[in-house]
Image (cartoon, rainbow, N blue to C red; front, side):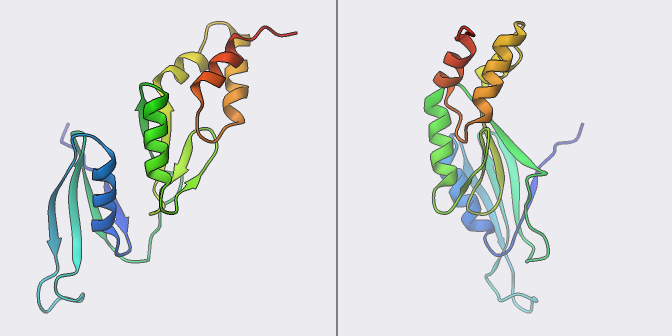
Length: 160
């Protein structure tokens, strides 16, 4: 299969988004910034695209204009090892105007949707004991940022 590179459409914020994301994720870099030259329909030096890598995954940020905006129909899922990772990504992605969503979803200040998901959550939600899975799911449904310890306690609680 050919390599796939997600392209994110921004309205003048491509370079700022690339800088923000590469400051959050490990092993990340801005690889190339392409600017408009003279005699373009945009002022010379304006950013057209910013290519960047987040922990080995390449992305392209395109300054395409105001015609399209992001929605929750597309999101990036961050599979976290523990609460420390959950808190890191949640705090950094919501800083500067991000919006908290429900069940570990958020929108960053650019409007891009992310799911900050602990790997263990999938195990808890798919527990072979349906009562335990339901208690974990019910606890998660009450949260914005995922609190793994609270979900574990709910899953392990004994129903009255």
